Structures are given as C-alpha cells and as structure tokens.
Length: 239
Image 1 (cartoon, rainbow, N blue to C red):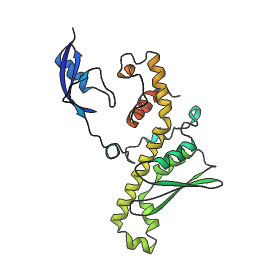
Image 2: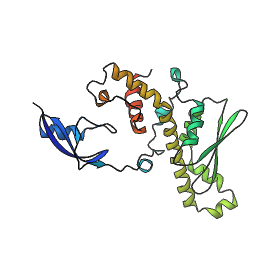
Image 3: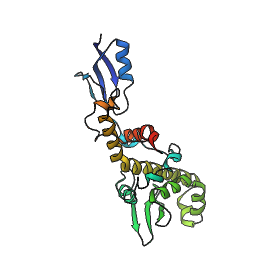
Image 4: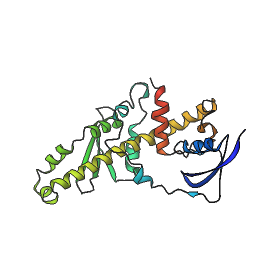
C-alpha cells in the first residue's frame, strides 16, 4: 500500500517534495532517479524554490566531449537533410555564446569569426563538397592547434601580440567554441524531429512506464534532453 513521504532534494527546484511510495526508501529512490529535465508526480512543499542554473557556463560541449563518430553519420543515407544548409546558417547567426557571421559567394559560404584573443578566423563551406554540416564537422574534428599557431606565427605582428603560451590557450578555446557550436546547430535542427518522435511514442503507449508518458507537451524540453532522446533513444532505431 502506497503512502505519502516527504523527500528533500536538489533538482530544478530545491527543497522538499511529497511523493507516493510504498516506503521511505522507495520515495527517496524515486526522487534520486529523476531524469534530467523531468518532473515527477508529487507536490512541492512551500519551502521549495527554483534552482539557479547557469545555462551557458555549465552545459557547454568541448572538442574532447563531442561524439564525432555519431556526428559524422548525420545527413547520411535516408537521413539526408536532417541538418540542412539553411539550418547551419540560421543557427550560426543565433549561437548565443560567441559571435559568428557568414558571407555567401557563388560556390561557397565563408563563415567569419574571431578568437577571444582577436584573431580573425574563416571557415569555407563549399557547395561542391557535400552538406555544410558535414563539412563543419570535418573542419572541427581535424582542427589542429599546432598548425594554426605555426601558420599565424609567421606574421611579425602576431608574434608581437601573442606569446606561444597565449596562442595555445587562444586556439584551444576557439576549438572548444567550435565544438559547442556544432552541438548547438545539431540540437536546434533536430528539435522538431525529437518532439514529434516523443509525441508519437507517447500516444502509442511506448512511454506508459516512463516519466515521458505523463507529459502533455514536450515543447519546453532542454537541449540536453534533445541530445539524450536523439542519441540514446532515437539513434537505436536508425538504419
């Protein structure tokens, strides 16, 4: 027989929640096993308050944490167009953590930005070498800090402005910015697809035993949830 138990927690809210469970330990287990971004059935008590989450500082991706083996499969086979060229250009301009722009030419698009140290950087995406997202994945994956430093230190002004140590730090940071940009573009591009997939599977009863099955709407899911559903759940159904 289930009873109501009060459990202290720290999640999207901090404080106390009252949940139904067969024992106190079960109640604690229910709260401790909440998925990121999901709420559970229960009542927040008056002492609870919203947790403060720094979205931009805590959730950035780095070059070392990107799943390049999966990113290289985007837009391949029957999934062609999953991240369109239009998506890439749209989300490059709306990326909130760093300034990017682009220039359209007859046969390519040139992305322009600056490192935090002030080095002007360009990435050329050709119309003849496949979709823009795949080209961007390749560029980021193969970005070589040592090569960039060697190239730029050929200039006298650059050698005056940057020590070698400063160059390494500047380009390592730039490489991580590019990695985070890649995931931003991907997760914004597939968001609608993920929401549709969640709605269909909820309506088909696939989520009857999951927190997802109790949601009336998925429109407010976070980018981290989009990543989780896309790679951990939807990816298993890909051909």
